[in-house]
Length: 224
Image (tube, rainbow, N blue to C red; front, top):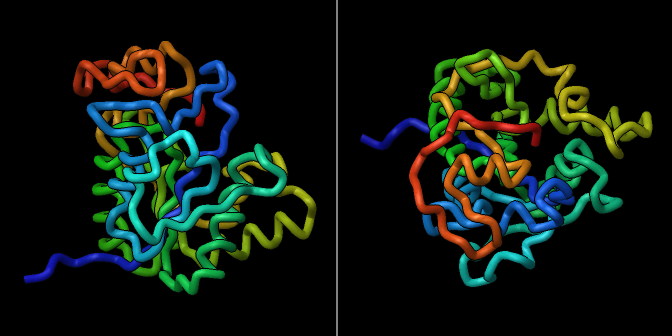
């Protein structure tokens, strides 16, 4: 029997400055043999269409799947809300019509665990405006969630009309959606903001250094 699934597209955010990493692109950091961007793409593998918003130049082209959409928020470094809006526009232009959009930041090495739990929650609540990851400690992670594509587009259009997309927050973008918080495994949304975060996860300094440990320090997280 074919496994039940919910149709969705995906927006992967990879456009930050990585200022606390000295400008080293997060998406090119390597964890257990794969770049963080590759791991995010793998987590979103069930999507109909995937768009990466940001710079993919630091990741070897041969490691990225054919058909991957790419775009950039305007202006560059305008923040995650603007990046999500740009990703939605790119999906629309490509003819994507899935009812849900998976939004993922590219700096969470173990996020596939969260996506699995979130997808199951989505299947269990048909018609929901969305599901967002929450750690066992109750801390929400809005950059790991499935959201109603229609609701997300409407919210982005309204923020844009008010001139609030640039440097706007994701929480403001999602404020009009009645999103359900779903508890995901500890460490599943641990992100890499600093070299301390990277070291806790076993990611060595530098873009080409392979992680030497598995989920060690996976409870460490930071703001995306």
